[in-house]
Amino acid sequence: MFKNIFAPKTVAHAHCDLPCGIYDPAQAKIEAQSVKAAMEKYAASSDADFKARAVAVKEERSELVKHHLWVLWTDYFKAPHFETYPQLHVLFNEATKLAGAGGTKGSNDVAVADKLLAKIEEISEIFWATKK
Image (cartoon, rainbow, N blue to C red; front, top):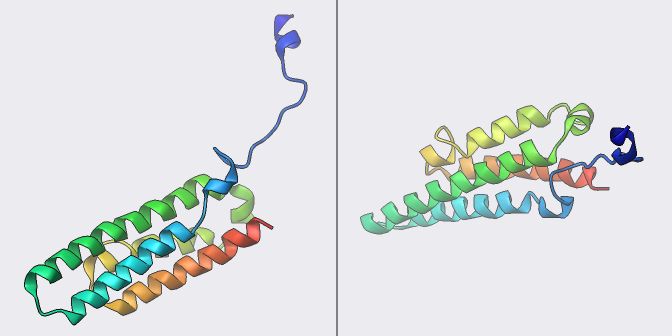
């Protein structure tokens, strides 16, 4: 009896854990741009100490790219998005791998950073399409 009295009359379904305004692929993009800049500075320097610092920054920022992508993948995007955009899982998998040991963490090749930025841009386009 009490269960029926206190039961909600209307059930609301939230899209995400917090208001959607907190999610933005720009965070991953900014970190990926930092990765690319660190790679470019690495290539332009002949100072071994500077190059070591550039690699450390690049690897730290690569890890942040993965973090921001994972938050979007696991917290923002929901089943209806994956139904509408079936390529999303593969896109996120490829992007996070490009930010990992087989990608920007394990390479100083600026072309790899460009590939990562392109994947983030694809994710961003889908993200903003879902916000319309």
